[in-house]
Image 1 (spheres, rainbow, N blue to C red):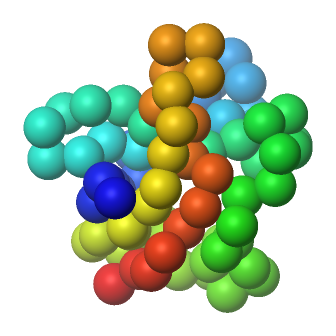
Image 2 (cartoon, one colour):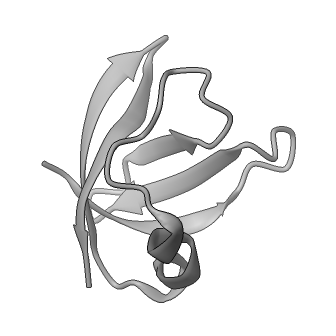
Length: 75
């Protein structure tokens, strides 16, 4: 379960949110459902995630990218 923080929205794909962990690895959260729904993303998530210092996620590698499929918790 990587712990990540928000970096930016992909300038070429506004449905792709980029996150990084402490090891500087990139993680991607897709808001358009192209890799299925992201479990744990509720309306409160979108109000808080920009300022969260840590977001604990589950991910899987899809097409060589770390794709977030579950948000476990935020602080």
